[in-house]
Image (spheres, one colour):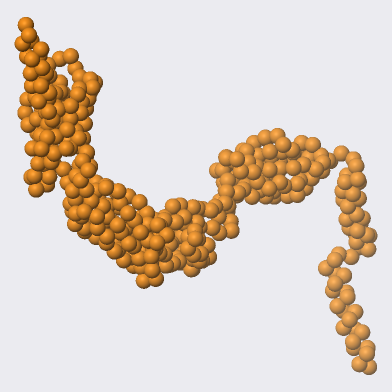
Length: 408
């Protein structure tokens, strides 16, 4: 049996040779296993050796390294979806390769030369800091970021190929530029400033058709502020590609705010503003006889009747207004009373009303004295037996006689 150690050694050597180019399975299914032959090649079709492969599937993973011919054998569960990532000192693949329903077959994984982009962004005055940069291809973003204080943006590792660079900043027109990237390249991008007119129209939707609101203040945060003209219009110049807040104010009206994005074309905006919610209460009289009814009228900010508003007398609800905003309120007790109305959380002004008693008191004495004064005068006139009209005639005749006597 002296030959046994030699045979065992030979078997071990053959096993090591057969395993060249494959990795060690970290975990895999207990079911059937198949071998994928993974061929890693450049964009030109050249094999890539020494590429590290990381294969994963649901419940397991394994690693392998390609041989000089660019190939490696990967054992995976039969029928599994396998994701293969590739890493290499000189080549890159930014998205993993996915194998659907793994079986005994060869798959080709393309890799690309490692590359990068350095962008130098400027305008007519020099470097442009804080400009947004996007490097995209086929609708997918590969890199995003902003320029530094020197107007420079440097990408991470990209795979060589055709890209579109998009550079933007508020106040500048967006710049799109096609780039062929192969290796580490530097490119310059020039931005151009610009502005566009924004026309704002302010109207009050209470009316049909809506009425223009003149002398309303239109403010664009951080940009400008101006007043609307007699037709409710104002036009302002706004830097292109700007996000701002539009704020419209006027005394007696509710303030309106909205976010506004201005692109690279003239823009028209319509803003509805309504009067501040308020109710005005008026009474037909400031004094009433106790026990009688008082008519009150409630109107809104537009002068229209405030219908179905709750009417309060000395803090207690005593009725509601009708469709015209009116209500008849009976005030039973003599003295000073306070009236107001409320609707939808809006409270009117307060109205003070005095109710006068018909029994005794100074007010009753005054009323009696006034009532007896007039008949006394009438009695005097009756005693003389002269009617008011006849007295006037006698006076005229007396004047005429006196004038004639004076001529003599």
